[in-house]
Image (cartoon, rainbow, N blue to C red):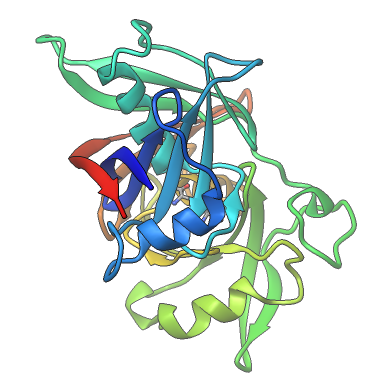
Length: 280
Ligand SMILES: N[C@@H](CCC[C@H](N)C(=O)O)C(=O)O
């Protein structure tokens, strides 16, 4: 197998991007496991495929390190968007991307010198009905500050889908959370038929949250874009913050707004790390 790839990161959440307009690859799930391996592969939190779409300007598919396919990836779509723009697959700065979470709209924000500054993404509207997220046991109700017991400790979960499922837990002191221990137990808890991404969030003030994440299919990552969006939505639903919040992640900062009209916007960086040829 022989294909060109580039390696990208957004707030330290890193991805191998393969451009399927140019490269012929298959068995995406097994390829993700192989290339994402940090010892025997390229090393990444996910494999992202750039593809043609019948419904939008482009199509993105994202596979986790365990080979599972996710519906959406917030940090990934910023990397995807910058790749598209810099590879000159479009001259547009605002375009549409078909994902498993529907059509997502990234916008390249340029500096005065016309270099890429940030990527702002219209992430669409959050899904709050339990059966749509999905979260079992709550019918079609919203799941706001509901108890969940992990290792004999009760947490309060607020569940949100940004196309992919998230469980947000507000804590007083994030340093007290043993993410490696509790993260995998949330992921496979019986409440979550499609597993779950779990965000632990400490509200610093009404415009600032510190957040850490355990990702479904990828374990601890340095940042999660959809998780940041879910966290703001959960924070507003719990009356903890305003609608426009800076999220401090292990790997950097994201800026997220949940507008009164219902749309979530996420802004943040996307950087190329290196490119190469994968040849085995
Ligand atoms: N890191 C991503 C989310 C990637 C997918 C996630 N692990 C899932 O399975 O839903 C982000 O930045 O949103």
